Image (tube, rainbow, N blue to C red; front, side, top):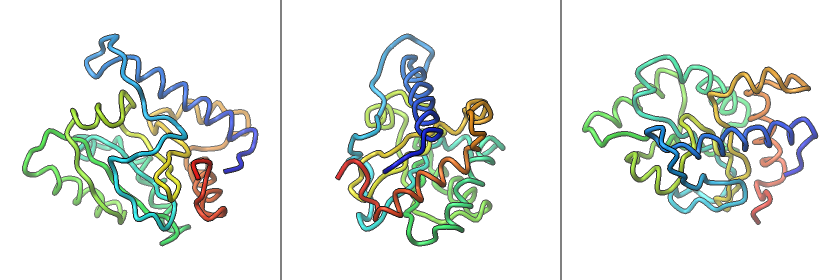
Length: 188
């Protein structure tokens, strides 16, 4: 994908946020785990392979409060603007309780978000994604290679970027650039 200078700065800021969060384990220890990085393939989640994808990773418990409201608006806007040109996968991280999938399904329906739901345990998440914070967007090309990673809880970074590009606009621009280039991205 080709990114503007402002987009590149925002990507670098996101990478620093994600890297910083990966240095502390889930219990706040200094245990280091490698975070999934831009340019790496993501084999643990199957994509259709016929279009770019937005992988939204969040904790099941986050569906019960209001902290996913801003990211949900971003996803809804992308789905409205790009339709079937973008695959959407919600990857919910939980403790394997019987009702977890229903919690996620109900939340997504209440937000008018369509897409496939996949479930993972916290242990599987740490193994496959390292220490990346929840909630996070991964923008994937059609070959399941990460083109961008955007921590959705870093809104202060979005407000401080030089070109005042909001999180929703930034994610939309990254996805549209990928869609506009047939979803090939840098990992092809």
